[in-house]
Every structure is written in structure tokens, then in C-alpha cells.
Image (spheres, helix red, strand yellow):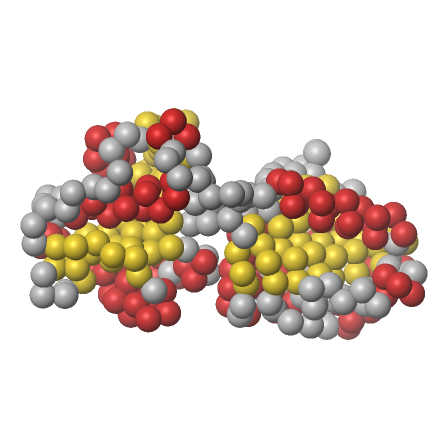
Length: 316
């Protein structure tokens, strides 16, 4: 169902590359200057993979924006102060819900600032869980089920086409952050450009901090280069050997395998046919495809051996 648009503005899908400056200007005004949200938090690496919408006044001036993440989370809802209370936020929200519904997403979620909770309730969302703090502002988890009124569903989970280093880095970080207890990585040298960032290291630390039950398995084709280049993960790999297992491939056919894999236990995967390139396919929620790739990884893992290079350096 299409939500009627009040007079005076329109809402349209945004092209992230083309409209980046416009999106950023609105969010800077509302979040960074208006609510003192740090810029490095407001502009995250997942932005290029999201579907954004823009609200524009009749003269074309941008007055609001919001985004839908690949896994069905809605966020970055922002309307400039002069247009608040005129229905802009509600129309943007419903447009994002319509996009999610068309993609076959059964439930959308968001983090609402506590003062805005009533607005989302009016649009069919319900609060759940305990309140939490994000960027110094109190929030609450909210969700809205879409399965009951789905009219058109996509044939399956959304598969993302990763085409650049920026997208690859953002997707890899999201997979790390979504991992519950298990993570599987097949790589030549642990992909320092994708996994060696401070954000990726922090995501790994958060995962292993859960302790018992965590299992991170890393299968490398060239462990020596990981040591030689002092990958930022090395201290954790060498210290937390009960939670993080590292193996090296030994079979010639596995040494020549050109691909790279990153898999979590939340249905997410990133498959690069050529590990030397950033291009590949990915999804944040596609359990069937993830399981298929997990089986391939498990076969590679069973043929590998504990990494002698890391064992020697850690004194094991």
C-alpha cells in the first residue's frame, strides 16, 4: 500500500553516490550539530550498502532522510527542524517499510530515541528489551512485523553485489559485528585491508569477550605473511588460542584455491571468487547459502593443520 503524501513535499529513493553530500548535510544538521553525535559514529561504513530515501520540498530542497540496512534495520531518520511536525518523518518511514516489504523482509527493526518512541508506535512498531545508551542518547529497541501484510515477496534473501574496497570493508565489519558465537574465515593473509581496521579489531574483541562457547576458526594460505606484516589481530590470535583457532592449508589444491570466505553464525556470508580482488557476493541473512559455504569451509578446515608459524611465535 502506498502512503499518501501530504502537500508540500515528496519522498524518493536516493542514490548514495550521487546524493551523499545531501544526505550528509541533513544528518550533520540533525545529529552532529543538533544532538552532538560524534561524526565518526554518525557516518558508519555500512552507509554505501543501505537503501536511502530523501524527502524534498516542492522547490527541490532536501528536508529529510532515512535508510534501510540490508538486514531490515531502519535508521538515520532525520528531518530538518523547519519541517518537523508536518508528516515528513512518517512518510519516509512508511516508504522504507514498503522497500523492506518488497524485498521479502518479514520484520523491520530500529533503535528509537526514547522521546520518539510514541512516533514509531503510531506506525505499528512495538518496543522490546531494556533501554540502552547510544552516542550518549537513551534508546529503545523497536520492531514491526511485516509478514502478515506482505503482498509481493522477493524470491529469497537479498544477495548483495560487492564492487569496491569500501563496500567490502563495510560488509566485512558488519559480519564481524553480527556474529553471535562463531566465525569462519578462509583467506590468504587475513585480508589486512578489510579485517585489519581498528573497528574490525574491536568487533573481534567484543566477540571473544563472550568467552565460553565462542569459536573463531581462521584458515590461512600464507600465515607467514600475516606474521611478517604484523596483522593487528596477531596479539589476540596468539593469546586466546582456546577461542581462536588458526590453521594453514597444506594440500596443493587448497594452496591454489583463489577464493576467500567470511562466514558468521547469524546467516551472513561474504564470498570473493578471487581473494586478490574486493568484488564478491554477500548477504547478512541467507542461512541456506551460508550453510552451503560453511560446508565448503569445513572441508578445507579438516584438510588443514595448526599453523606452525603462529605456534612458534606464541611459544606453544
